[in-house]
Structures are given as C-alpha cells and as structure tokens.
Image 1: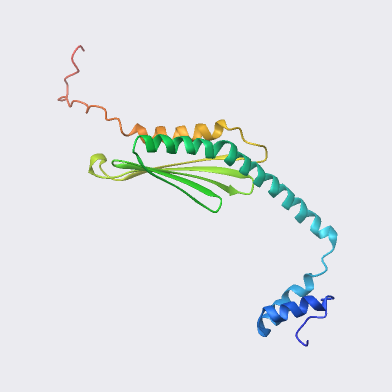
Image 2: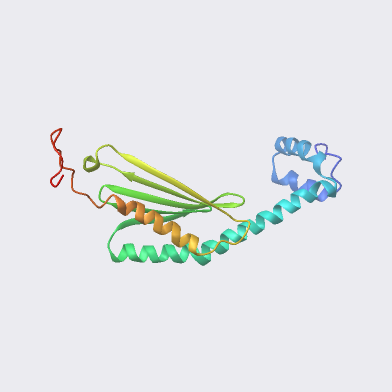
Length: 188
C-alpha cells in the first residue's frame, strides 16, 4: 500500500480506508490526519472537560424542554385548537417554533439552545395590513443560562409574554378627539 502514511500502526485501518474512499481522496485525507494520530493525553484533557460540560448543558436543556416547555406548548396548542386559531408548531434541530396567526397580526416564538450554555426565546411579532398602517415588527430575545437546571416557571412566563404581546394590538382604543387649538376638553 504505497499511499498509506507510516504514522498508522494499524494496517487493517488503512485497508478499510482504501476500500471506503477513492485512492486520491484517501491519500489526501491520510496526509492530513496522520500527524494527529498520537496526540498526547495532556492535550486532550481540556477537550474532554469541555465535552463533559457540553453534555451537562445539553442535559439541562433536554430536561427543561421535556419537563416545562413541551407541556406548556401542549397546553397552548390545545387552547388554540379549541378556539380555532390558526397556528403551527414545528421543530428543526434543537429549535422548537410556534407560529400563531390572528387577523392582521402574526407572531412566532422560537425556543432553542443558541449557545452551548444558554437557551434562547426569540419573540417575533409582525403587524401587517392597512388596518394598522405600515407593517411593523417587534422582536424580543430572552436568554437563560443552562449552567444550572432551569425552573419550569421560565417556560410559562415566556409563553405568557409571547401571547400577551400578540393580544395587546387586538384591543382598539377609541380615537382621540381632535380639538381646535386653544380649546380644552370639557370640564377644564
């Protein structure tokens, strides 16, 4: 096997690679990974510690999703279904998204582990159409640390915040009466 690096002690490994890849790719790959085959254990200690911390963060996120977020989302979805409100719940990767459509307004809440040690709630609320003039967008982002387990109340608080921000624009106040300059309101 002329293309296999001498840095590999295990000839069986090289034979497997030879069958898996085409010859040119195997040559290229082996020349790049060969020098790193025997990395001293001291250099790998920081990497191992980082992986263990990441697993802890991932576990805290998983526990928070299963114990708090998903039950809250299930309750909200049941409420939306019972009231025939157009909505969609989707997930992709480590994200969970809830989109709600109300007349001229729609909103989306995205829940994700945006950093290795944080869970993020992104609130996007869009008002559109002539009823409200120009389109407008309100975006809020709240981030919570995953270094410690999160209480379930965080999920409830975030969903309430999201739904209340959407509902605020649905209530129309009566227009202010325009008075000519110099005249006050009655009773002044």
